[in-house]
Length: 120
Image (cartoon, rainbow, N blue to C red; front, side, top):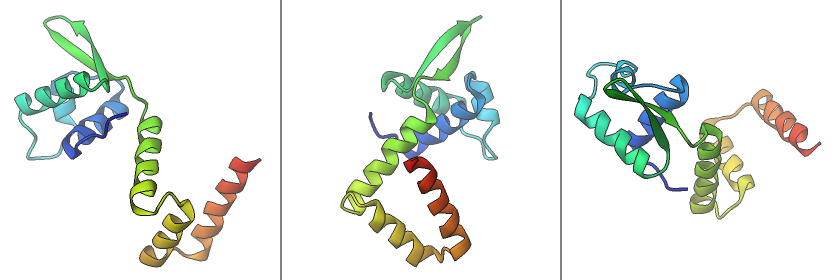
C-alpha cells in the first residue's frame, strides 16, 4: 500500500468520516481558510489513481468513496513507523512514548488490558 502525503491523508480522513462525498462536501469539512475546489479535486483524482478512492457518477458530478479502510491504512502506517524509527520493536516504541509523553500508570494499565484481550 502506498504512503499518502499530508494533504491526501487529510482528504482521506474526511472521506472515512463521511463514507461518500462530492468535492463540495469534502471542502465543507475543512475549517477556514478552506482549500480551493480545484486543489481538492486534484487530490481526490490522485487518491483515485493510487487506488485509495473510487467514484460513482451522480448527475454531472462524482461522489467519491474510500476503497481502503481507515484501519488498514492506520495499521500499515504504524508498522512503517515502528520499522523505520524503532527497529521493528513495538516495545521500543511504547518505551519511547512513555518517556516522552509522561504516560501515567492508569493509562499504562489500560494499554496492558487491551494487549491482554488481544492475546486471548
